[in-house]
Each structure stands twice: as C-alpha cells, then as structure tokens.
Image (cartoon, rainbow, N blue to C red; front, side, top):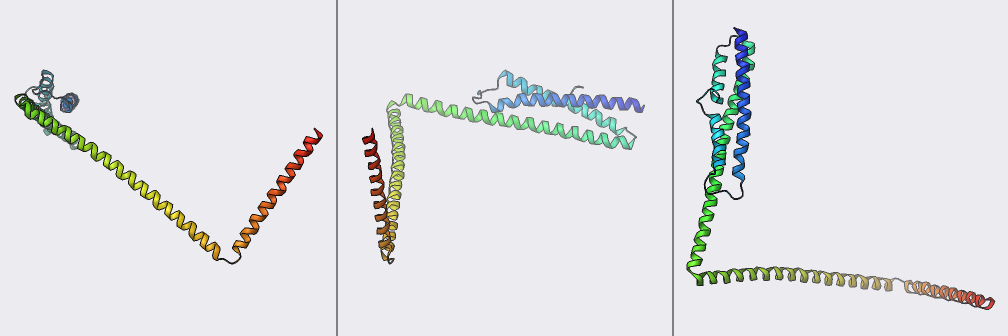
Length: 232
C-alpha cells in the first residue's frame, strides 16, 4: 500500500512539474504581446489563443489542470502515515502551490499590462484622428499651427546658436585672462631680476661669452672651408 501511494505521489508530482513547465512556456509567449511596439487596437487571434492556453492550464476543471493535480497531491499527502517522508513531501507541495500562485499573478499582471498598453495606443490614435479631422475641417487653423511649429523650431535653432556663441565668448575671455596672467608673470620676473644685485652683469657676461663662442666657431668653420677650397 505504501509503495502504491509512493508511486501515485511520484506520478502526480511529475505531472504537476510538467504542467508547471508548460505554463511557464505559455506565459513567456503571452508576455511578448505586452512588449509590442505597435499594439493592435483589439486582441488578435494569436493573442487570444496564447491567453486561453495559459488560462486553460490554470483552471480548476479537468484532470490535466494544475490546481486539480496539486489538490490530488494534497489529498494523497493527508493520508500519508510516515512522518519522515511527509516532511519532504509537504515542502514539495508548498513549492508547487507557491509556483501556481505566482503564475496566476503573472497572468493577471500581463493582462493588465497589455490592456494598459492597448488603452494608451487607442487614446493616442484617437487624439491623432481628432487632430487630423480638425486640420482637414479648418485649413486656416492648420496653416497657422504649421507656422507656429516652424516658429518654435526656429526659436530652438536660435537658442542653440546663442548657446554656442556664449561658449565661444567664454573661451575667448579665458584665453585673454590667461594671456594677461602670463604677461603679469613675465613682468614680475623681469622686475625681480632687475632688483637682484649683479644679475644684469651676470646675464651680460653670459651673453658676451655666447657671442664670443659663436664668433670663434664661425671663424673655425670659415677657415676649414677655405682650406678645403684651397687644396681642392
């Protein structure tokens, strides 16, 4: 008897897991309709079929429905006499019930999301139709609205140009400030050098030595060139 009950539990649990996997697949298919870019104003046959498949798996009636299988597992567990095995089975049954509740909430959430997306699309479509009808019935108003739109676009273009010019003027002012800062630093260095005793004399001697070295080097090069030209 225990063996028969164990086999019945294993078969029902496997069946429940199979139905759970089928439900997840159907939910994934049904969720694609909530992410459509251009959702149709009314549910398509494909959407209706996907929703019906999920609902069918979650319904109560029928031997192949998840709730029925989970209920059968509960009844079978109530007749279980072995406490050790019942603890593990209780945990498995709780997980199956939680997953069933999660899938029902997912279905309700997807239905709400699809309906809200459809309502938004219908509202936007209705507004567009009303605007088109108004423009068709009032050409002068449509022309005036077009001119206002063009005016707004021109204003935005002017704002962008003003922003670019403001940035250019700011950069120019920054460069002028840096140039003035460098000139001030140069003046301070020159003033400090002139106030140090003997610094001008030292600078003059260094310059004179450079000129002398230049003259000597130039004379040597000229002598070498003349010697080369003479012996050539």
